[in-house]
Length: 498
Image (cartoon, rainbow, N blue to C red; front, side, top):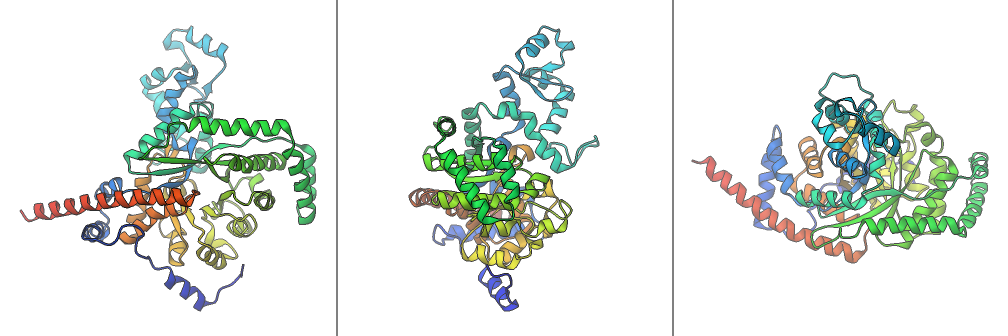
């Protein structure tokens, strides 16, 4: 990839990037009326209530950057506490799973219990509000209690609800489906569950020694891959993992809604655990077409993630060569100024694209700091690699919003993008709200907004036939939506003349 673009090439790239007409239904009277109505909502000071009404009704093709465990609201997890027979310690807000402790607590009078059932949590307003503030970002911006930095709070939430997020998969997925249908989302591609992993201390020592020698590292990865590939227990664990996904997804897909699943590796583990989990993820995707891609997750600014970032990208490169049909999306560049030393902001998106071969980039926040930023944007535009934009998450976790958000660069230089939620349960928002933020902050035209909705089907990790089916559905839903908005606009105009 070229490291530099001339000023003329950058200008040409910007011109080519101007919003195209939306893909989908042909231009019509209703589409024109909808575009005019929408333009009135973003003119001057954006009309947020009306934009909320507009985008709640507007069809959203899909949500491509979506974490299962982070998408479920706290209220659902609290209900799961009773279903599992657990209780919540009202002093630590951790879920208690030990049967002997739970039995001891339940033998006490209610007023003396420190470990509460769901009903008891809801009945104690102080405990309930404190739990909300630990299991999500509820009240973070409007209360005066001592609290951790937002990124720490965000990543800590998963430890609180972990004991119940790793069970009740069917119920959780059904809840997400119901909410998606209610806000006119037709497809979700969720990062559902991490793949199995095996520790190997010898591998870890060799990885450290081979970090700067690609030939030696590739030889090490090849030997590890061959050993794992014929490991009967490892393959059985993958079969069990795939079975969990298949079982959990039963009854999800219908004529209104479709869901597919990414598996992922947690980047904060030892090299052997990362590689074996990554390999299991690729093998799982080969084994079942419900698993459509592989990702890598975990706080990118943490010590291990930064230390091993280049190693992880080389692992992806190796496994992509072994499993070329498996799709890869990747959290890359979810970093802001001050999270890491300046040199740590220089290469993450670039390596995700060039070394690991990512087909979608999640977040991509550090773009403006990357050494090869112009070439990164050129590659993403020319190779049709989208960035997944998560406005609420980026603002809360990283403090990146408004004119400081790289969506301005991605749009200006023609990089395709999708609008997505990240962890809507933790940050307590919806995909509709992400479109409200996008429209009110950046004032894209209706054609660009509509194209963003279609992009979430275009860039889904689905077969051509499935994309065509979902696109036809989106066409029909937009025709209905635009007819409804045209009528609403006409009614409002008539009311205004009275």
